[in-house]
Image 1 (cartoon, rainbow, N blue to C red):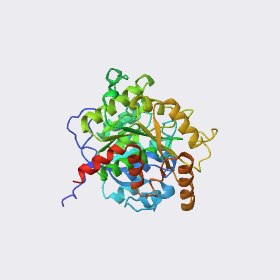
Image 2: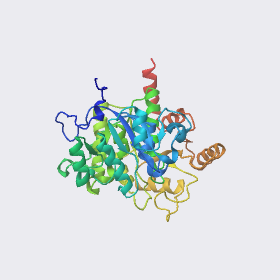
Image 3: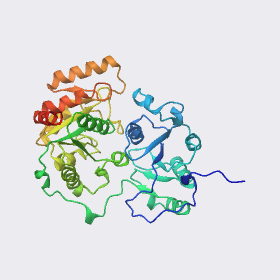
Image 4: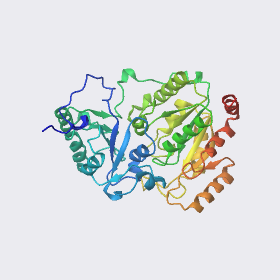
Amino acid sequence: MSQPKQHPAADPRRQFAPRTATQLPSGSTAIVYCEGQFGEQDGKTANGLVRHSEKYEIVSVIDSRQAGTDAGSFLDGTPNGIPVLTDLRQAIAHAGHVPDYLICGVAPADGLLSADQRVVLLDGIARGMHIINGLHEFLNDDAEFAAASLLADVTITDIRRPKEKKDLHLFSGKIFDVTCPRIAVLGTDGSIGKRTTATLLVQALNAHGIKAVMVGTGQTTLIQGGKYGVALDALVPQFCSGEVEHQVVSAFEGENPDIIIVEGQGALSHPAYLTSAHILRGSRPAGVIVQHAPKRQVLGDFPMVAMPTAAHEVQLIEAFADTKVVGITVNHEHMTGEEIGEAINALELEFGIPATDPLTRPLDQLVKMVLLAFPELETTIASTTR
């Protein structure tokens, strides 16, 4: 009696052609592991992959707390067909085969795995799944993970592992040759929605005939498949502004865009996450959009520190860099629909610039925010509609 055909990702004995450290195996199906954190600040990698992924087909999310829900409905109120399931066994059974990848979707402040999380990722390896790891803890350097991956003939990709220092870039001044405008999407805290807003902004601008390219600065954007970017918080500080500059210049030379959107990290005012300073210095944006959560009382990972006001962050950014804040975007956590509208109106009245919530308001409002700051882009729209 013949045996049923097995999905290639389910066979731990399968062989791969030789590949360099930067190449990934073929296949794209992925389960995202985010136990206890999906929809939370420390689940931002999983949250981002559910909303947008160019590289992987996300087949499910693991979080027993939210099991039984649709990931899109849970996050944003719109179903996307990605189920949230209890554990890895159930996720594989739901897929009908062993998916190609298990992505670590948690992003704790210390960037380290717990004992329980290690067990799940090692189980994925034993089942023949490649691991995508965005934490500060490099699993290829862990003897247990290295041995397990060798035995199962799978790969571990440590997204945050920086290039060799000889391949890193110091600030060079090449940013002065970038002639298109840059907008940095910064914020008042970490895990506040900067990447989501930047992604939606790029999509909306392109849909309106304005060629926009995103430069990522965090591990989640790189996992999502961003073409240009660097995990900024994994670098020696001396190279941070130079690497941001290099990625912006590469995007400009490689894509010839009308505008470049730079993802922010942390906040300029943040006591621990200071990479906004390097983003401002390296990309030299002509405009900044500030993301703010009006209902957040303390910093997400540092509850001993009170949240700054939007006004304080705007003042700090404009004092630190030769730029102007051109818009405010609202993170609507813990807010009713009525409160979101009130917050938007209050911010516009306070600052005299546009404000919106990218997840509950039409994306046209983000486009209008940019066009008001850079009216010369109107000619781009006109030329593409002729």
